[in-house]
Length: 321
Image (tube, rainbow, N blue to C red):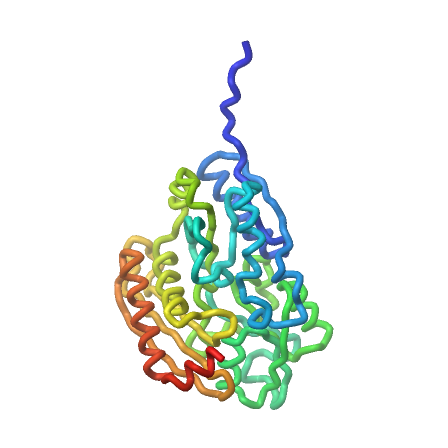
């Protein structure tokens, strides 16, 4: 009589097929295999966000274009979990889906990448800088109104290729992606958060699953890095309160003074909002020591209210137009 097969079935990770997305999925696969000793496979997919490169995200549906196809794979049962760059995840998930965990954050800062210039300050008057992020664009304009800022879409390798072909004097990318792919040498300057504030969730990875898989939700929750989770909850609450999307030049970043996950200290949450047409920014910040999601999100709403009060109705109406 043949003994029953007790080998657990494989979990399937839905992932975009860019080199960075595959690195992230492989990273999670390694964590899952080590923690649960379970087979894990990858389901590579191309999203609409990867396909539409001739228009800015704000004009074609926002960052949700990078996750929709992966959510469909979860809905249809072709995958069990999806790995996302958290900054690409919409503030509101579809009904029946949940972020089961948020992993420890890589460097959240932006990176200045150039073949000819050592820093943002070193760029000559009128230099062409590539970015399609409204958040980066408004901060760049406030810092250097003389620069010529041009759209830059595509995955990380495509953006670097366009720089190398001479289309730009410099480009601005997330430091985390470059570091994860072993491309740290391409970074000429890691831009301090006092100079350019990151996007909500930047540098962190989130794992999305269906709520009707409670055992998987429980298992994945053990991978959560609590300081990163609470920090990104606060950041995302700022964006959610303001209706943040790719069409809103909004930055939010929470920072703990210590890397000690058990005693990280007092968190500082900073945010800024850019004007849609003028070189103007409003800033807000608060501090707290959240230990629960509700406390973290309350800090985010507090900062959002400060931004709303400073910007005023006319500014906010212009952003919504």
